[in-house]
Length: 379
Image (cartoon, rainbow, N blue to C red; front, side):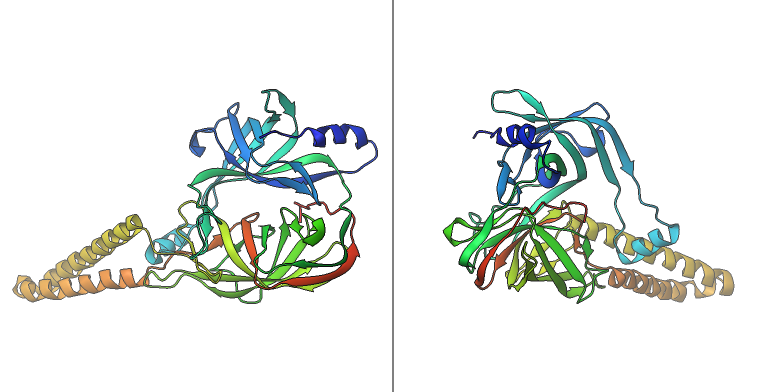
């Protein structure tokens, strides 16, 4: 595998005459270090997961290596009220997690011969990720990745490259074609409702017949088609997305039919993806179930003791036997209610989540041309 130097040569040739653009790329950290141990001055190496495109032009191939020297590492803790913490403990509701913001002092691209070339880059998000694939898909078509530390990086300073014609007369996106997209706004099943608008942008061109393309950066729009938040008795949340419009660079919007076929999710989310593209929070973990059972027992035991001692203090030891029996039933009931109030796992898709869509039916398009379509990471 070789890394083309064309983007860098092109940049120096036309940077005086072209407006610099920025693109987003997802990369996997190869340096073995826990997030909590990252400190200023630390060095991270990562490989870009997929080719990086601007319009229809490939800027960097997959597996390109990046090296980050960190200037600062900031842990951002969300403000959570005590009342909200108690409510989440009682019902098993989700609480926002702490996030880390990494600011690089220097970023280099590593060429195959071992030399480093500086590049303008910003770390947008940092998270531990795993790849979900729809049930029924073969592993060869959608390989299941292990949990890994993932960066979304904004690469800047590339000149705008004309995309050229999309298609001359007619072209077709065949049924079964894949589209790799980046979600522009985060979603959570507990907050979303059917009809909420969604937007995403192509991360790489869709290849058409005759060598033409729908360029990277093309906007896809749609709506949440179904959403249920996490429900009691450990029932998980569910979320279904419907991308139904493809906005071409010439301004036209074409109706599309797609199915979500894979998605990146945060580590520990426990989510699953069914064959129809529906996301589910998945079953609760054994650890959480054990903790909830322990809390249910403790709460029941506490109510048992309080009731029994209160009866003894009020009517004396003569009624101790019947008080103990009654208190035991009340304690068991309290523990059972605690368990019944527990909610299942939520479905969360943070901003810049990478998704893969499969076209459910072919799309025929008439002739058109298009200019450059820069990926707009600031939408």
